[in-house]
Image (cartoon, helix red, strand yellow):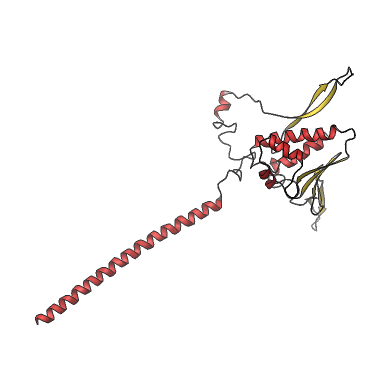
Length: 269
């Protein structure tokens, strides 16, 4: 069930990218994959079905809690990013997401096949069997990013000699693939300082648009513009009121002077 375990941790990790640092997510996926593998292999009779409680009533399986703690991830923050009432059902050859509240099941692995439905015009259109909100937030809206936004795990084998045996037994485990690329001076000069991304890179993975987590809120910008506009209008109105008040004072002063002059002139006559 190596493939099923890898698909499970990749599915869970897909909800975390963009908010939690990628290195921690990959480490979490590696630890969780090995813990699941130990749970399934250490039993004399591996269960046919393994239910992994992801986020039900704010609680998660101890495997997820331990993996999050070892990866220095906040469990509360992680649960806030995962769907509510989510249980992952792992079987031989399939992985399904189960809603603990409604019992609804959606396939994670193998991926649902597409259906070709005939339209009235006689053509054909492709429709996915799953609903639009099935798998992960990256699988539909960022269609080309799904292969990039997932932990890259490889299977290694640890050979041990059992007690009283002369033949080594290979025990599989998951290991995270890390990029050990060597940069030339020219390639390094084209990257950003402190990053492996090119200076021309303008997004996360896809290369177009910044990630929602790092992008300043447009709503905040709009509120700031409204405030500045109101402040500018208030300043203009204040200046106009002061000018009108000065004009009224001048007119009042002139009238008062005229009245005083008329009164004094009448007395002289």
